[in-house]
Image (cartoon, rainbow, N blue to C red; front, side, top):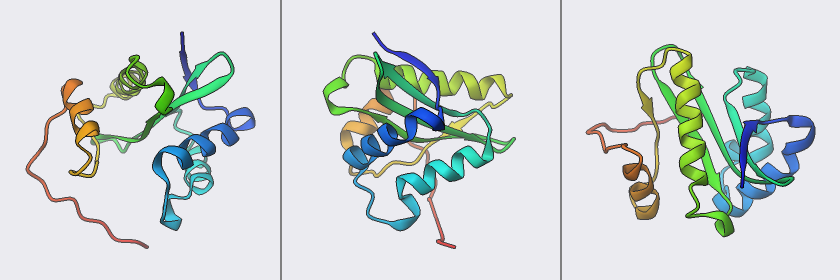
Amino acid sequence: MHEIRHYDDTSDRLQVVELWQHIFGYETAHNEPNLSISKKIAVNDGLFFVAVENTQIIGTVMAGYDGHRGWLYSVSVHPNKRHHGIGSSLVQHAESALSNLGCMKVKLQILDTNESTVAFYRSLGYSTEPTLSMGKLL
């Protein structure tokens, strides 16, 4: 059985970095796990959660809220622990935390070629919206 709790930088960083490198591979400098973690904890918004089984981190989710809409980032579950409801629990936990802040809509971005991830989010009630995602590296 797993529990979901707030990320603790004093004990969780190494395991989260290893998990993200294993799952996401990160090829761009702005997505480097240590940088992403440091930037998130600097915001100190309480929206970074880990799923833990015994003492092992088996999943993560980061959420963000700007007062207008919420976002989900870095939803991950160790490949050996998938299909046991952990990802769903993480997303629902983040959604609840966002809702408690007054958030009324949650968005996320995924590659449209990642069919299994698209199916996962659809199973949780997410739908494709007719928008164009744009970005700019600073």
